Amino acid sequence: MIRTFAALDLPAATRDRLRMLGEMLPLKRRVPPENLHLTLVFLGELDDPTLESAHDGFDALRHPAFDLRIEGLGLFGGDRPRAVYAGVAPSEALMRLQAGVARAARTAGVALATRRFVPHVTLARWQPRGPDLVRLEHAMAQMSGFATDPVEVTEFVLYRSDLGGGQARYTELCRYPLA
Ligand code: 2AM
Image 1 (cartoon, rainbow, N blue to C red):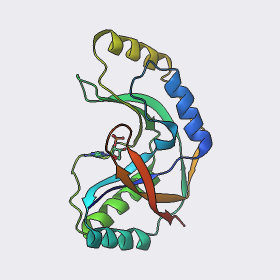
Image 2 (spheres, rainbow, N blue to C red):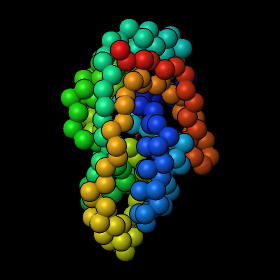
Image 3 (cartoon, rainbow, N blue to C red):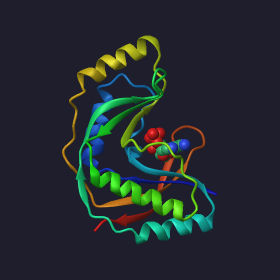
């Protein structure tokens, strides 16, 4: 079984921008710059035939390339935050691509979580509490106007994720170009 997800890779300049943003925030358990990505669909643990079918489905998708902008900051987890993320400016093209990738995965027999897609790039996976949370929210408010230059989206990527120990290790399995 292979743990996989489909995501947008980010250009070096965008990663660098997000790294600098992350360094200006009082974060713990930061996602290292090489691991920053925008998840489209988390596929979970797949056996070989299902992975092969998902790959065929992704390969057959035809979506136009588009631009998006990473902007704003948010916390996942409601009253008990557990992750800090950079948001994404509303993008119909991104929502259509995500829906296409999710449909292809379901058609291949992948059981996807039904929760709503909230486009984001996770900057830190950590549960700030008490004074840490107050400091973080203050810094986030000061940087709420953060936005990257437009990011050209010309492909999406199927990744393998290996957890074990400390940081997750992501390995590219295949790139799927957009038209
Ligand atoms: P996150 O950034 O919000 O944590 C690889 O694990 C990617 O898939 C991560 O970016 C993670 O999103 C996303 N993901 C979605 N659902 C997941 C799940 N149930 N377990 C782990 N990662 C998940």
